[in-house]
Image 1: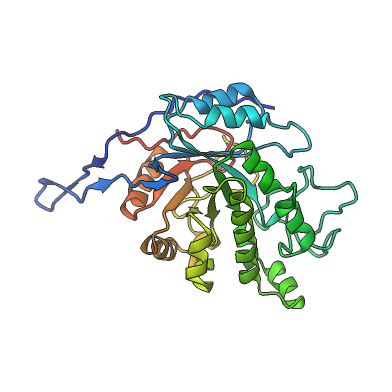
Image 2 (image 1 turned 135 degrees about the vertical axis):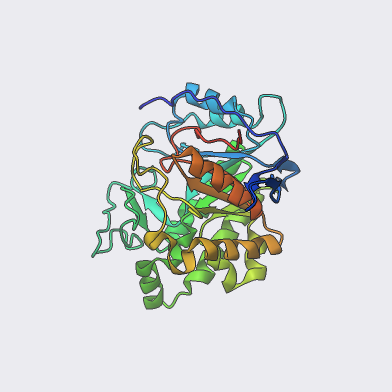
Length: 350
C-alpha cells in the first residue's frame, strides 16, 4: 500500500477576504466580501473539513491527518475490509481531537446504496451483477455508473441488505461502538438509479420513501447507542422535494460533490483527470451548477448546513471554487477524486 505523501496543511484563519476588481476607468474598488461559512454540530463549530477514505491502514498516515487543524474529518473506518484492514480503534482515538486539544467531529464514510466486493459482508457465494444481469443474491442489481470497480447498486430496501447495516451487530452499531460521531452517507442517490427504479417498480416499492426509511433507520440505530449520532447525506439533493419536513428531520447536514468541478472515477491522485473537469452530462439539466446551487439553497433555508466538495488540481480553479462556495453559504472542501491524500488546495487565499 502506497503511503500518503506529506503535505503541509495551512488553513485560512481570516474570517473575511476582500477581493478587488477594476472599473472601466481603471480604478480598483472592493467587491462584495467573501465571508467564511461555518456551522455548529454537536456543539462544535465547523468551518473547515477534510475527506480521506484511502491509505489509512498506515499509522503514519493517520498521524499526519491527526496533525491537521480541521474541525471535521470524514474517513473510511476500514474495519470491515477483507484485506488491509484499518486499525479503527487507533484511528478513532487519534482523530477525535485537534492538535490544540479541542474536540473535532469524526464521521465514518459508508456506502449505503451499493455493495462493495472488498467488504467482509461480501460472501464467497455472492456473484457480482453485470451491466445486463442482476447478481446473486438478487438485491445486487447492476454496475456502478461512474466506473468505480467492485461497487454495485443494490435494492436497499431488501431486508437482507438492511440487516447488514441495522442488525443487532450491524455496521451502524459497530461504528457507534467505535466512537464515531456519526456517518457520512454515500450513494443516497441509489433511489434515482435507472435499474434500481425499475426493480422498485416491479416490486411495488417507492424508492424515495424507502431511502428515507433506510436513513431514518440508520439514525435511530446510531442514536440508540449515542444520542448525538450525526447523519450527513452526500448528494441526492432532490430527495428533499419528496418530503421536505421528513427529510430534514432525519439528516443533520447535506454534502454535495461536483458543484463546480469533478473528476473521473477510479483514477489515481496524480492522474490529470482526478479533478478540474466540468460541463458535459455531469453538469446538465437538473445538475447544472446553477440548479445545484438553487437546490442546495433549499436546505440552507430549512436550517440544514451544506458542505461542498469539488475536485480540482488547478490552484486557480480551487481558489475560485472556495470563493463561489462561501458566497453561496456552503462549507467547502477542494480535493481530488481518489480521496487518498490530504488536499493540496486547503482553504487558503494568498
